[in-house]
Image (tube, rainbow, N blue to C red; front, side, top):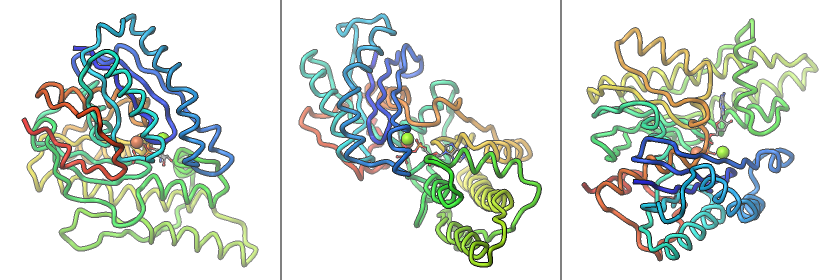
Amino acid sequence: ELILAVETSCDETAVAVIRGGREIVSNFISSQIETHERFGGVVPEIASRKHVESITLIMEQAMAEAGASFRDLSAIAVTQGPGLVGALLVGIMAAKSLAMALDLPLIGTHHIAGHIYANRLVHDIVYPSVALVVSGGHTELVVLESEGVFRIIGRTRDDAVGEAYDKVARSLQFPYPGGPHVDKLALEAEEEIVLPRAWLEPDSFDFSFSGLKSAVLASINQSRMKGEPLKAEALARGFQASVIDVLVTKALRAVQAVGAKQLLLCGGVAANRGLRAALAARCEAEGVPLLIPPHSLCTDNAAMIGAAAHLKWKHGEFTPLDMKAEPGLSLEQWSVRG
Ligand code: ATP
Ligand code: MG
Ligand code: FE
């Protein structure tokens, strides 16, 4: 089957055509990063307006590149949530119009299910598995009980990892999104300022990054007040080391706890070179297969939405045409009923 998938939950307008849930027939992304850069973050109203400007063109490009006609499609998938409500609405309107005009089923799709199932575009997933989701808005440990069935065992109690990276980067004067800049600085650093790790309760799979972020900001302010030079590299390295230590340790503990056959890494922060290397080393040492999508499928894209929507398509679980954007859509409730 051929699914046309639309993603507009944040600042990327993306459309893809996916065959059989695994094969990328076409995959188009128009990023608004340059627009939002000067504001130091995503401005919701501007994001919606930009989506409106690009969605039709991106859709036409995705179809042209696929060499397919609208009549060849089996279903229309669209991110229903979580995300910015005004941004989600643009994709939903476009997807609904298309589904209505072509008389095709609509599949409202969970954005994080998409990040997780980006892995299936390049790897075979076996169950049960554990997914470590690290993105701009989420930090979660998710058990994949079986195909399309999700159980969240850990989540952040405050900032998401990507959010912490972006705030630290901003205080070091880097443009949005700052994650890649901090990653680079950390890897080049010769010294490390050791920062605290938030382990929480001994058996908890939850995360907390706001204390760590505050420690970095406090150190920057102290240097400023004392008129000392800023040790940006050493701070970036200390911050990254703390983040990676906690993420890697808890992810592998989760794998042991549920007897998972694989560990999947996904979300925008999966692009972090330090995290990838540390996870790969620990997984290798413990004999745990590690799946990571290629860089282009880690950050927001529509191919991953098509991959997740395929799970619903398989079971004929479609979404009514009057569905609404759900900024707080639950991943567990989105699980396939089978
Ligand atoms: P969500 O998926 O939770 O709704 P989002 O879609 O905004 O959030 P993504 O696009 O998945 O998030 O990821 C973007 C985040 O990834 C940003 O916070 C960005 O700084 C971070 N990021 C990207 N590359 C790196 C890197 N190399 N190191 C650390 N963080 C990174
Ligand atoms: Mg994004
Ligand atoms: Fe995302």
